[in-house]
Length: 463
Picture 1: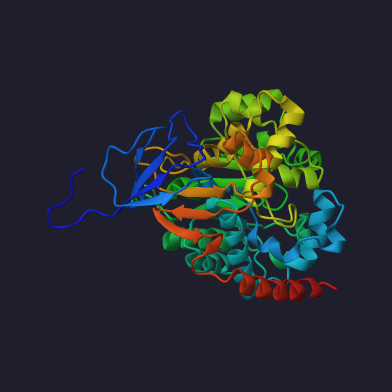
Picture 2: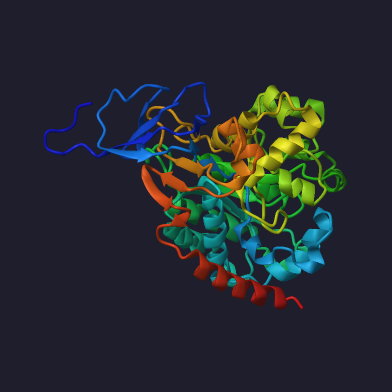
């Protein structure tokens, strides 16, 4: 490789001799890979050495290297309401009805802490790109996205923040209390503001660290007009669209009662049935609807733990993939999952999906692929989610030196079936942000203490 005569080439690091590598594609890197600046510049096959010069070696003996995972659906603020007694053992709609009484008291300090904690939890589990869907805007939290941007800057990770919205409160027949909704003019104005302030497009930024998408919460919390206007705004600004859809049969019944249409028909009426859109959950579709989703290249964020905890159902991931949909993985909100661990979500997906499709079609590689290349496809990102030359050096390194892995013959399968849950190292854009399972800039104990204090304050506010 040649470098400028006026500038010394950046140091090149060889991640050498891993126990296993999951690349997310058909390429092989049995003896590791080379990283320079923010990119992967060479894959090294088993028994071989790099053909390019390198400056340093990272010994990866006994470790598995994989692409950093990409979380495509979450609600960071919900880390403040894990396992709240009044919400336990309820299906989605009664669960929401109870928790809105708590969430209406959210403030900026709480969201800041929750964003840091949820983001760190995701990173510790192997995520290099974290995604959030924030849609609760009580009076003290009108600038929620700005608060989240500040918190994410301290994490030094990639992020996709979806500017959520709710405009139909209980007084207009909606589910949420009026105290957490906003006027539609305010929603649209602020959506444009946060896009202008924070969105890094792939056109103007080679490898964006922060992107904004637009995300009305669900069909039962916004008007049809807001869905239409949001789609137009997204097209105008070339940003993505996100919402919950077909999560429960109750939602299907609601849409038919209010709009005279099933959720997917309603989505199409609102101008959302295209490859700009990715949907959370996507459980209750008919075969005909799955075909329409595939033809439109709509994305689906599969959230297995939440779907099991709330007894919502099982996402037909393989049917969706075979139809042409882009399918990725999300942990969903921490009040409907009670953790933000992406490695654990991969295992949950494997187990749940085998109940539907059997063991031979749902492999460890399939589940890991949902969390990496699949999730990248939901975000229309081609620079992350796999290990290949010229892709971003966003990497998760797991150490197999633990009791749970002892005796494992296939190191990549062991990550999933033996239950990996904490990274040894995490690299984002070529830089280590976690080493020896510790973030370089954040004291996780101090963060947890502060977060727990704010969680108790929030939960007690509803008593």
